[in-house]
Image (tube, rainbow, N blue to C red; front, side, top):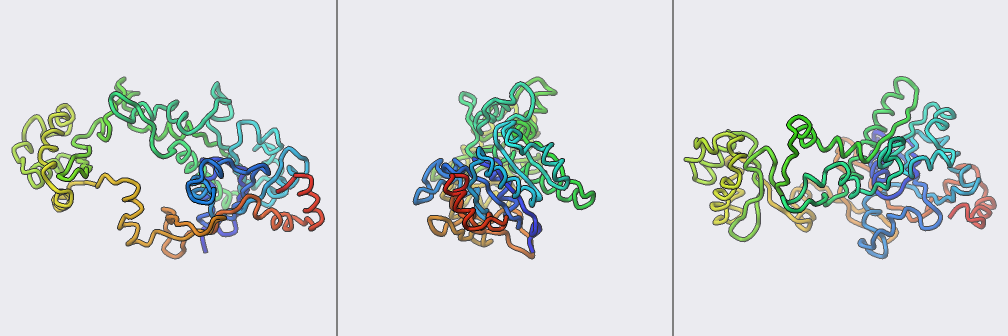
Length: 394
């Protein structure tokens, strides 16, 4: 039995943030009913056609183990069907534009009045009030607004994170918020109204950079792979052009690096490098000294020395190397997932229960489960045919 077996989630969702949250719930056993538009569905279906056969990579990543129903919520009957689905749900999750769900009759206050045990999660870019309430909020835009881009990149060029971190951060807080609300409901019997914004999520994830700027008045410098307050902490070349990342966290590790890996024992106690603060002040000279040694070593030799000395390190892999990574293979982390274009490889989710494996059910076609869900709601085949002819469902 998975932890969320018996829990039903109705997700009026699109793009990345909300689908990421609901997929985590589905992974743990929840029944997730994905409500999509009749005219093309979740627009992430067509962001690209990178999987094959026209299926978008974002959609394949975010929507396994869900049931899809296609509804026209501009029509009264479409909204009535959604209301019936929500009435039987434990969680209602939505990431429409601020105020849109309420205008359709699915605002948190009215839903909670009708269904006191329901957990309502509203996701947005900036929240339900404030001067940025109606501002467009795509991942890159929120990364920029929350300062993440300002601390990422080179001294000359800021860059956004390569993964949609604003969407992922908000999705994870919506996921954990749903779990917390379900636990509380088990004690009190009461549901909850939860708001999660991408901006708040990234603001929290700014962490050390936020607090350093707040209390010192100095924002951290952009230092490519380097850390603003730790050194050495960067990528260093090897003999065949394959960089290795070294991350020294304390002075003991620095001594091990200098003496057992680099054969630069004199640097271990040199006042210019003996403490982390000194190493940060002399970062450029330090990095040049380290690179001068590592550039003469093959990567396997450098990694072996670092591991034997207990110095934290990693290979600077590309995504091809991740796909072929021995750690994923040895721990059997790959599974086949069904989809409208055939079986696809997918990685198991990170939460690993010893006694139950995560759900890895198929990725749905648009409206694939419309008839089944309508039948569960008591609609006859004639009624379904009428709804389809009117464009209410697809």
